[in-house]
Image 1 (cartoon, helix red, strand yellow):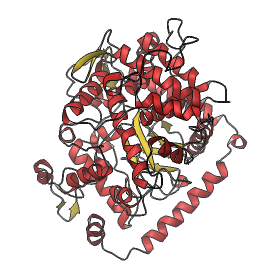
Image 2: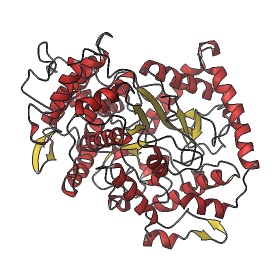
Image 3: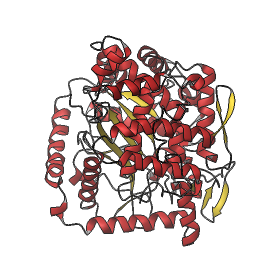
Image 4: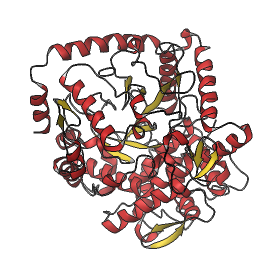
Length: 567
């Protein structure tokens, strides 16, 4: 079934590391997970004859080695538009890019300057990256002398008022999106809303589900089975998302302007920035997307019903601090409501179960209507060394990782395990490359290196199925990642600090030099090299017409529209 990953309905789209001689995890003869005597440590007790082993064996025995291939994937990539001097652009979203409300491929996130590129669902990572590159080239042609900032963390911030809230026109849905962002600014500050990242959307091949249902001896016709399997995947991603921060985190430093009052636990990198010596992703740390209010909100992924119920409860529960902000003040909305969450998507999670929503439909309503359709992985920093912010290695790894999380045993998570998950996430974000770092698993300390190596060993069996008849791209990516586990200096976060030191540049100078180089490279490409230029041009024009139609056909007042949305 064809799906559209990213809807513009209310908010709801160099190598990672270099192979190293010491990375012997996938030496010849050790690739079969059954022959090694080791197993997935995400499984309770780490039993060799685990559910993961059984599932992989039965899939292999069916003879269809391509059963896991054919899933759909897409990318949502955020980045700031900045001036030639590196300051956040104060200009409106370029009109030649169409309507940010209705364009399927180019929109805005929090800020008018925080542009977001959305690729359609594709069958291969190569197709996804080609579309993303074409969108970049198309966008640069409409931006004048502005640049696309290549780092996840913003630099050269002067005042929160410089970060203009995204505008979507005069329709009810457009005003709702703007008010929601206004509320985020009041709740968390606008600086946090200038952070950018990459989201990876993925749906398992439809042909896989009947086979998987037979393996699990359940009714494959029931949507509950599919949703339950996706929720099992979500639970395992939550358990193991620290691995993504370690392998692909690329924000070990932040500009001083982002933290004008300083930051506990960070050191001065240069006159204009702070860093943590072993940090992987400060974007995903307590100075990035994490905050005290949301830390108190528990959203279970033990079942779809619990997930929907917990999010709904947070949207309906008042919060004293947000009540003090006010909802309507002097006739203007400051936020959509004074509850713990204004809407479901305010809750930040490294992964979300998703379903394409109808216009104006709440995400939880869509999930309740049709079940889980795909997942959105949100843990990736922008890769400063990739012109489009992400490379093929990351996309292939994420696909294999998600399938591993689907097939590995995934018991329900209780409050004690959730505390361990939060601990591991925060620890790796701030100190992930620290030698002999210990994480917590089932109440015991475990070496990050040992746990990561065991996960990659389990992923090797998945990679073999994905590689069937197509060379060994997935296994090669795992070898690269194994090198990063053996040698932390091979990771992007370490490379970034190393190149900063070698260049003598400050963090903002480093980002600006990269941005100028990427702009120059994209502008040097002939339009004839852009496979999707006409599609993007036609979509920009059509999106303006769609926005006009929506604005002309509103029949409710804004108050009525909001009441209906939450009813």
